[in-house]
Length: 179
Image (tube, rainbow, N blue to C red; front, side, top):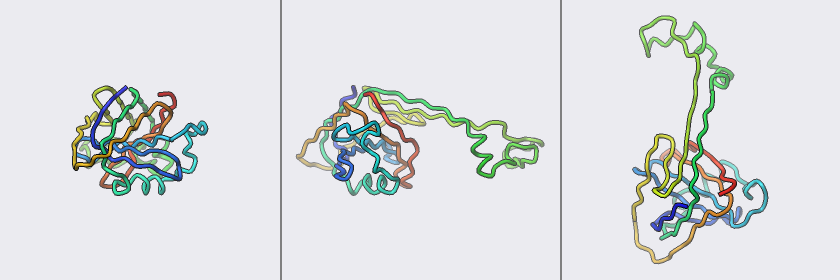
């Protein structure tokens, strides 16, 4: 388990009956956001009501409180690899994979085309903190003083995502079923 006691943004979503914890990465452009249900309701982690719009609204920093939080997260590592060539071609990028491709802006070589596009991602949480995508390590910063102390113990299934904060784009979404 990873144990940390720091000031983090924490909230509770009444509609979903779950806690929300934001763990900022160094520079604060990226954050890991964890949605931890109060109880295990079903195999969906009790999050069937979740939509992208609601997720963005409920996890906005201004909807969370900056509190001293005792965080306990299980150690885990998720890695995934996706072959995107077929998907990109189906989205209208067929020429990129053919001899008709014009990649002269990348290379002066003629007849250059793309043969394969692979996306690889990983997320790791261990005793030192959390790493994601480009292996950027988290640095925790205390921003203000409050006396309330809270507990966030992820000892049952939860979902998490890595968010690019300036654009609110979700870069990675995962579910941990057996912490």
